[in-house]
Image (cartoon, rainbow, N blue to C red; front, top):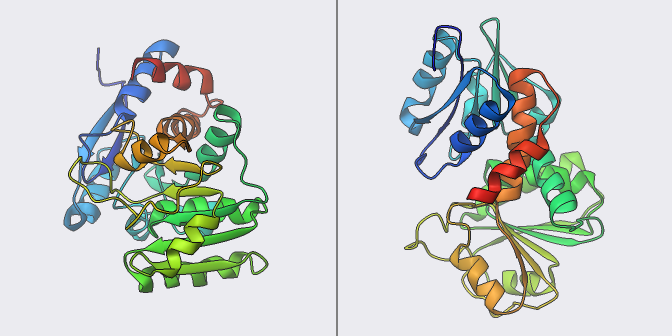
Length: 283
């Protein structure tokens, strides 16, 4: 039962109804016997500054940040840790004595999900990101820190992809980083040579969405497709990959892992991976 002592957590985004984060965090809190409540908040871009100020004023202990706010929210926080600053994106905010601290657990969650849950590595691989937003920043940062062979970014807006490329080159000038617009025929050759293709756009949240690529003629059975979307559990992109014999990975394991790392920051205890991953069984 919620009382005046209940710790309030949450997640902000637009859209938000698809989010499994409340189910995961509230379920794990119940399993661990913690008095907390995790609430989803629908916040559009025009309301972001007011929403952050309101959550701070209300004394909410912390909240997660999802699309499209991971970059914009940094302007409204009091502090960001070095990793979040380097990534240029925040997915976790903790309120400590009225000061908002920003972190990013996406990268660690991504690595944990791939290596510990799916037995997939990124070292020495040719990586392609579909999208150039906040999640692309976070995961690209992790890839550059883990000796990938090359990194390519394919995005609807070439200008936005080029800006991300410039930021990433300041972090690691040794790894080749290439950018392409989604409609550029040259992107198909890069996709064909890739080992790991990761969709970090929101295309796939709705059954009416276009694919994040203009063609799938480049599919090879040796490739692995990753989609950070977890609801639906199989996007059209992953479905087509599976039907062509490719290994496919949805965003559920990454969701659970990054949530466990965020939970660690919220409640100041070791990340409860087993509890978060056990919650996936009922999804």
